[in-house]
Length: 459
Image 1 (tube, one colour):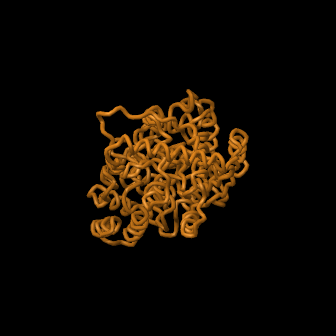
Image 2 (tube, one colour):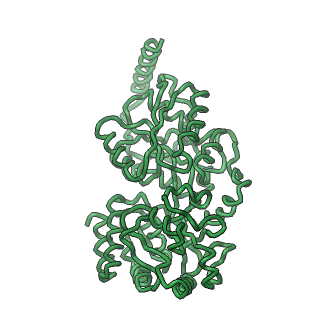
Image 3 (cartoon, one colour):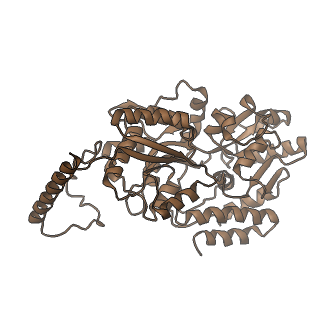
């Protein structure tokens, strides 16, 4: 039967092509933007092309995004999908330490998975930019985009390549932040410098707090970690927010961290007793030191740690947990931070197999735009990127019964530009932590910042 259907589909497709050719005076240029004076055609995207036989099995590789990194939790989602569609899903769980290498090797060897779950910096700026991803534009209608834009217009921009192709279907997002050891701050008389209701503080009060903590403990209380790129969103946000510097231009075509305001911030941090540039620590190592009580603040933090500190998998013996920890926006001159965001969703590797691609699209719509989206979002332990899904499933209050998530939501309006899709992003991350090491070694800040900002863009 499958063979007959394929033949019929081929005949039908050929007839349609001939009919279109007879009615057309030329071949449309796919690189040109649609004519705004013409009424766009409406396409039903919830179901695959009826001329395509969907594959009955697909593969998903996922980075550890909340409980999407936990086999037992993911199985609940894939079992529900299989029950609804008959399509089986084989899952492989990636670690950030070597996940990129595994994916790149699979791409080189022709063994890439059908689906990948991660963020735009990989799906759009890396694998999409290198031609490995399927354009998912046909999965979005005007209503989908409106529901996403109602939460943050930056999400669709981040998931869209400069070519106009959409390489990621977003599911969840969060704001990265920092954390403080409330007990240590209290003992040092530094709690007066933070606003625990709004979870904000000014640059001036940050400096005063560090001074108070150092006076109390006489040791490093905060680390500008720079052993590698792990958790680098924290160090970027710290530096940018202190005096209002930027990391990239608005067009995401150049790096601007040689901004004099960033130079001022780096000089301030390096000259502070109690703050150390530590080339032995990456983000996860810093979190471990924070849990152990060695550091009194952590610059690598988000809701995943706040919900379940043990989920950080640092291996540290934790003495700082629960009520000891307060999440905080990064300090800024006026107390209003621009936070780094995280966006996670699904992309499809281009296998050239229409059946597998159709099945993968079915998976994405099931997880990201149906009544099942509530469960998919909760599995990730982050915030939904849209207000509604499917035919009216409300996503706006799914965390109403979770006190921590409800409180953390105060940070979401502080989300800044999602610049992780800037040209040459992989090199930029390496250049950033290498630059931090040089600053910590005593190099002239303005010179070393200019050098590595230029290197980041390939200069």
